[in-house]
Length: 418
Image (cartoon, rainbow, N blue to C red; front, side):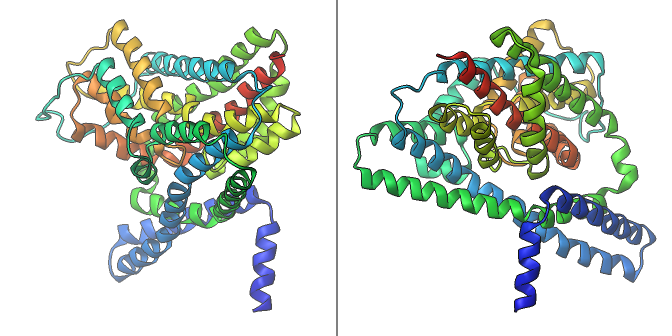
């Protein structure tokens, strides 16, 4: 028993990034071995399938744990911050929200431009006989978001409706600001407990990623991934433009100072961790610690960071726009006008604000954007499946952009608000 405890302690004290890299390497090796056995056939193929499927449980458990804890984390952190913090001097929230929304919309515009410059086509099934649905307009999107806001809070948490979670957390927090000191202490303790659970889940990331990489490579193989390299390149390239060009321009316009020291600090201390955890919600404790290190206003970042994990989704806007246009490019006789592109940017930005703060959350918003061009759900879900195949890279970069920019814009608002 003591030997097991010592191993667990060494693992907990180890470098998380190194452990995750080891998990990726081992998962790739086992995945390629399993894929080779399936190609050769025979009894070894059946054995490989059993082994890889057993390993994949680790990945499913990891993703399931993140999806389970993220809605509760968002609700508890936002509600607790509003209930327990003194907002007498809390200034800058309006500026933070505006920066979040502007950045997300500009990211969608960058993605649309990248798709026009470097069009990507995908091999999809059933294109000829696909039944095209009516285009979805902005009014329908806004109507859907309004209904999400008034959804039952328990159902919102259970289904991962983050817009509804935020609405109820803010409303409940405001309603309970006058509660007793003892009640506020209970909320603070619950918040600390949920944060500890999230940190524990993050520590298990090497095992989860090991399972995810192994099953992904086992099922697709290296040859199958080649066709998606261009899609990955366009996605990652657009996100890097957002992180290193768009965000610095926004920061410079607001602060009139060199933005790159702040940008690079956030990349190193927030984006790297978010890249490997692939969860904006799970990276909230990291961002809060970084804000504290930067000396930002606690009454501001205690709200803006949890809020940013749900509505500051520039990377998600990039993913939604590029995958939707990849579907459009793959279907003959569909043309995209400037007005369509602008509307897509708007819809992608709105949809991204409701994207889940956990791994792969933005992919489920792709059918929303595809509906704008009358693309049926069957076709759209094929694109979503491709998104999950490339998600090891795409979702990691997306989360890194999303999460690190939370701190960037919070710092800008904190430093420019009296």
